[in-house]
Image (cartoon, rainbow, N blue to C red; front, side, top):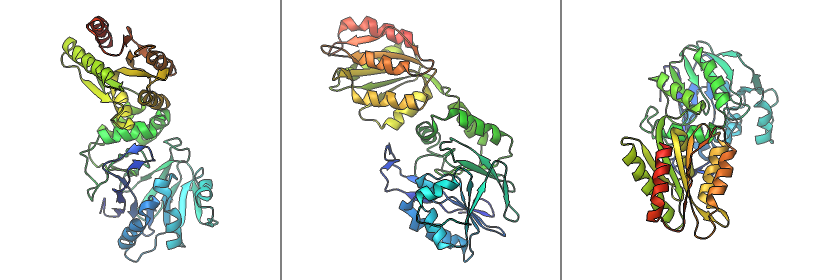
Length: 389
């Protein structure tokens, strides 16, 4: 599939995978993107997960049409992109690897049996590589989201190869410009994969801002060719941890359904008090946690409703709060509902976990439900609805 006259897409889909990074549900699969630049000298932009190595090599061989590649540019060593490096080096023994100074030692870590002597070109910020008509400019992007990451700007066609940046979950099924899943899948990918590293993303965006970029080629998901300001603007907002909506996320973890009933009652109260406010309910027991994490960052306000469990917090809520903490959740207004039949403890643990996050406005009152929501709980629930909005 041609992206420009000389740049081809040679990536592959993985529709058999159930969990990306063994933790994120991907019901629509995932793409492992790789690109080929055909010039006087030929460069392959990244490899793919070894799960799809054979299909990738077959696609590359067809696209090369008898030519030998001179370079394999490795922007990111994570196995979903670097998993087929050794296989490519064996297939084309004269080919050299071009990668960052920090990535070069990782080659031995992942492929200890392979001799990389005299086959690695380690580049640093601003280095260039001429292929003939096309020149690659290398831009270091440490901690987006590994320390060795770089991105590559192709100066002639003004194409930015962005490693994991601007990536999404979801297979492409032959349509590299299918944007129907954007921005939801890109948001879910960003906050769960790169979310902790807002400052490094901001630093990279400043570098990218100095370039004339006409298309973005990520390592997962569709190639972006139009309205690039929209996508870059979202990345700017996400990496600043700014909310996209001033709506309310109500995330609940309910054992027998009574906490869920309270969560739904609160949603109705919020909508009655502030008609038109976006309110989204997420059942943490039945929703993939990566979806809940993305929604927490999307919304400016959140109410957590959870059952007490073993003298602490019901585990789906505990897992959710742990996830948003390590991804840098901050600057949000949060309310709490706890449920406990004899010794409510969920609220205490939720407060402790939220205290580890920055700039959280914890609103009062915290509502305590005893087993099931009663008419006597309604005043506190209405007060919480008013406080959160």
